[in-house]
Amino acid sequence: MQLKTFERTSGIKSELTQIRRAGNIPAVIYAKGELAQHVVVDGAQFRALLRDVKKGCLSITKISLEGNNGIKEAVLKEIQYNPTTYDVSHLDFESLDPSRYINVKVPIQYVGIADCVGIKSGGGTLRQVIRSMRISCLPKNIPGEPLQIDIRELQVGQTKRLSDIVMPDGIKPLADLNEVAVVIAKG
Image (cartoon, one colour):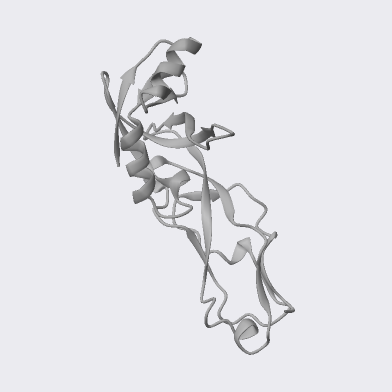
């Protein structure tokens, strides 16, 4: 996914207001060991990108930021919204360095909900205790899909822990793997 960026001066309130009125979004690109780069992101392009991203996967989506200094790969670290209109008011990106580890939050997907024994015949309900997990990895190892836990065999009262997730190679979990991720509760 690619976004066009344009340079801007930092923090002048009147300039930020003009950027937002034009339908664009002020943003900052952070990179370890470098000064923050203040840019403007094309608002229409960003909204189109949001429509194309799988639900819950924005934090693991690699975005190519095309600007005056060439193309930088980055991940979105924070979105700020206007509290009354819920329009995007600011973006924070973290530039990806192929040789540096990065911490990202990966969504957890529960597989086999429709076939779950505890829900189907036991009358239980699915309770998702943890919806995402922080990991550390090199940019090339950022998962393109959510981490998965198969819950087909769970009975009412049974749980699955984060340790039940099959971790792809090159990923180090930053969470306690003994934490309960999902439980089939009595209905």
